[in-house]
Image 1 (cartoon, helix red, strand yellow):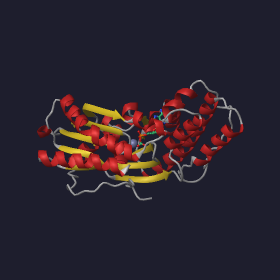
Image 2 (cartoon, protein in one colour):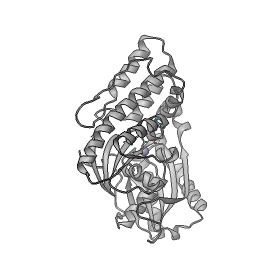
Image 3 (cartoon, helix red, strand yellow):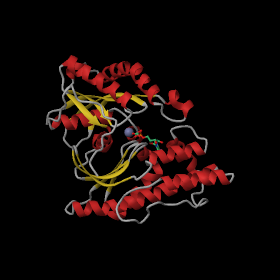
Image 4 (cartoon, rainbow, N blue to C red):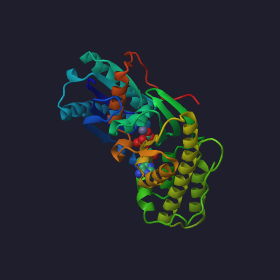
Length: 345
Ligand code: KG4
Ligand code: ZN
């Protein structure tokens, strides 16, 4: 099979990133020739969250240099690429436009095709960048903006099993971190703090636990944590551990339900993969708990390394490769999209 080499660009939130990836086989893995990420954390830290205008301006200032570095580290010129891929949504529209316009200009200048990538699909295919993972597989997409369980049947082909009816899991981590006066992004901080805490200390709710379907809800959990911080002097590590324990219970219960739905849809699939993707998938405690669930339910857990779970451009380049292999290119007129669901509910 012919190798395909793609430059990927990611600017949908607070990471400005560019990467060059080469794909040699259809199922993966890919060779990451470069993977440059500039995190805007310091710019946003004083505000306790991502400020869209600041993000868009920082992307404008940083992106050209980051693309140059990604090409230089890969030792390739634009002419040696097969395509240019960029996140075209969903995300903060100003930032998405910066990345997409840059990709269009590079594609036009180099005479290369463009691939407009859905950021959620990029997270969803990231496991195939890291190792050979065959379709169909069950996908848990857990990030700052999304929390979904999907059946991944192929490139551009996902079926929805469950989604959050309020907050995303990463959002809950970030809000609870804020209540504990921990800096943004809260997920990694809570994970570290929870290591030394007692997860049984605080009794927190598990919304939708045991309900039919595989939808999620985190807002009641977040409110319960807020109530505790208002009513008593809290033990931060114990509260972090209790919160993370509740998130794990919710994810485990909903994933078990989705595994049953997946097996009904794909009864002939032996030892299917269960892929975790998105920033929250970087959480080791969540990974161990869902890994244990996979053992009892007959699935095989696949989680990209933390650096490829959180936002990066290598997953965008890889999605570009997967789409290019199928001839799925986009015209230069393609528009950036703030909202772009992976599949209709
Ligand atoms: O995928 P991502 O980088 O950006 C989005 O597309 O949203 O995910 C960022 C989210 C943040 O909410 C962050 O707190 C969370 O992922 N996160 C974690 C961990 N690392 C990042 N949550 C829990 N544990 C972690 N180790
Ligand atoms: Zn993301």
